[in-house]
Image (cartoon, rainbow, N blue to C red):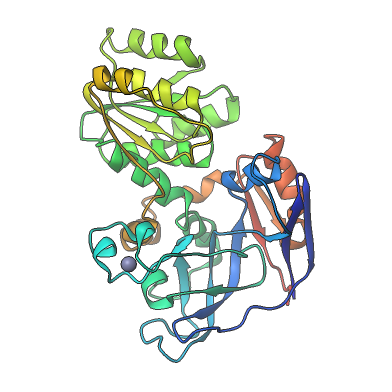
Length: 342
Ligand SMILES: [Zn+2]
């Protein structure tokens, strides 16, 4: 089969690769219905993360179970499933505490930008929908594999409560879905930090009440202005840079919370500043698996449309253009369809 490989900065190829196989009895093979390019795929694509050898790409997926290993008892061939970017057994103490992305058996799921994907720990990782979804629900369900679950976790980690005032740092797919999550959790005022007209528009449609275009010190000052000098109750940090993290901490009122889900690149915190900020910090790789059943139900009932973050859809063999469009910020997020690729 053909799959997506990253060779070096800017060099993504769709080329002949070995088809995945069941390797251990807890594996499943999933025939991909749709996959996508993640903001985090852009770090190695931009050369900001070293690549030792050509790397299979993609960790967001949904599709039909094609084959299961002999120890898989819950997931069945023919089911439509969604899973997270980390495989988890869903039974260990960390999974039971709701932190499946810290599972004691955790394993990264890679190579999803291809027609067929091996998913380890299938029974713990995959969640099946009641029936095979109609075509129009596929983008919404795919979004649950990472970005919607991550935005949801950012809002939960930021302790968003009914009536709260919230700020969201980052206007990528996760930040935008963080806005939607904060809205669903009952936030009254949601300040989206964005400089891009199309993203501002989607943020407003997802529930943002205010837009702040400034960044850094000016961004913090603007948020203080909007909150009578107090700061917000909750900040969702969806970027992962030093500037974004400090903006998040400094925009939060004493006793408030920062939920951080941007993968940190060069973030360092000063103990003194943190001590006197009086804020709660919680974050990390979102335990998407915990949220899947509830989020699938919301999509199924038509209550949310997180797939609206996909503003570019391409056949999988044009994956390189999907990366370029996101790298150049021409697209928020690229959806890829295998379209008969074998
Ligand atoms: Zn576990």
